[in-house]
Figure (tube, rainbow, N blue to C red):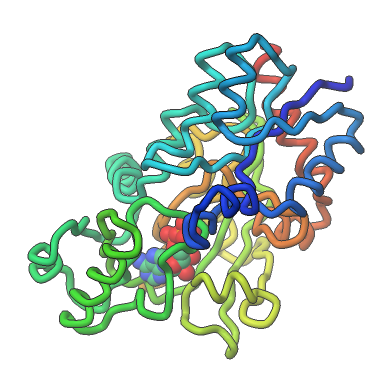
Length: 329
Ligand SMILES: Nc1ncnc2c1ncn2[C@@H]1O[C@H](COP(=O)(O)OP(=O)(O)O)[C@@H](O)[C@H]1O
Ligand SMILES: [Mg+2]
């Protein structure tokens, strides 16, 4: 059945035009991504209207406009609850929408709070401290090496070759750099030296399924043994990807862990869970992305679909169907 779909997004170009810096728009989408998503939705027989960002959506909803479903990939511009803004506005106006609710979207943008919830439920995650002052950075009691990242960013923002810190003095410098660049607390975690996997999940309740467990392998060209901004930008040269399948033990472990965490955090329709092994090869939770990137070529969820024979349009169809079923019940 053809639906009327409102597309919500934050475009890089719009926000650059409005005066944002390149760093501020890093998480946002390119025009190409929107064109690809629109094309898939058309191909599935739906009508698509570009609504735009959260404010544009709010204005339209206040005027009384409605869509069968809002397909939301807007990351939001300001504040640590920014990913929750479109979901919250949709709920305010009883507008059906894709993906997780405001609580999940707000929680998961804060990596430290998410780790606390996940840890409280008995899942493993690297020991960490949240640092907000130079004095706190100096007093970090975790053993070296540690890994530093802004506490509430995504898309590898603030992840560079400097994120891995081996000396205490380096820690204070890197903290100050991140603090200055991102104006927020810094998450200091025990460095996880092992293999890295990202797991794509689509669906709800007992219909949730793992699209793939994808190992992220850093090649000789990678700037560091981490998914940094540069490694992601130039992934064709710097990263290789491999689907982990049974009977490789890590595949089943990652699949079960990611699904359990997806449900624990109340994720809906789709998400991507990032895990990495500690020195003993045991998987640890890093973060979850309830608004996984959906570029038809570059995004991890789409790459793992491609490796497993699932097309972009099939992924979009499954997400849409999951969301639609929630409202039909
Ligand atoms: N504690 C850690 N130890 C080792 N590498 C890490 C650690 N935390 C993050 N990384 C690396 O940094 C990348 C980005 O971190 P992540 O928490 O997934 O943030 P985001 O993807 O939102 O930028 C990870 O994919 C991983 O390569
Ligand atoms: Mg990540």
